[in-house]
Image (cartoon, rainbow, N blue to C red; front, side):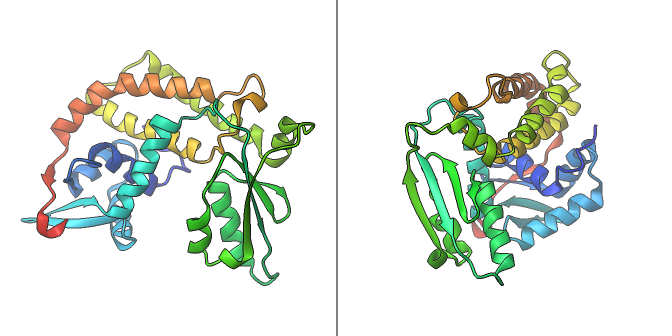
Length: 276
């Protein structure tokens, strides 16, 4: 069992901690993390380097117990994980309840600001926006981008509006022109192809722990890239619903043996008050 090339160790680490640590006030032993990651094809050195980088970035904190080093969440990483949890279990992959509202964001940056332009476009894509025209981006629903824009220092260069399409406009055609639907659909279809066999197969308990980690990390990666376009304006065979069913079925099937394995394999200690 190996990770897909594009699934970064940090994404796996956050998924692992969201699964095992979030909301429990515990820290996990580095050796336990190395063991689990080894089962999904991530080597010890890569795992240790990822832990160190995440500590340096404020996503993890260390807690020493005797000669062992344990790792726990920071407020920042806990917030990131709660957002991921919400996207998986509450928001979901299929937008059936769109109210017709769009968020429009226009920006005008000096030609020399290439890095700022790249950063803004990357953040907008991450938050579900697509380029309607050059300098005018659009996302379904009401998206609050104030924090995003302020973080980039671009508040003076950005204007945000809420809007509804004119009655005569072909929203389906606009969506196809603005977002790469075929690329997004292929991600969902590839997910189904990869994971559907596990709806009926079942690994041993130790294998289930690593497999469920990969399942959750891959699913979160897909839905974080999905702008959640209104399903009534998407092609009739849009694959998100099938993919979400596959995710939930496989997750439910893997959970009992994965929990059994985590009880046996993971060394957890309570967060100490002096280090919380």
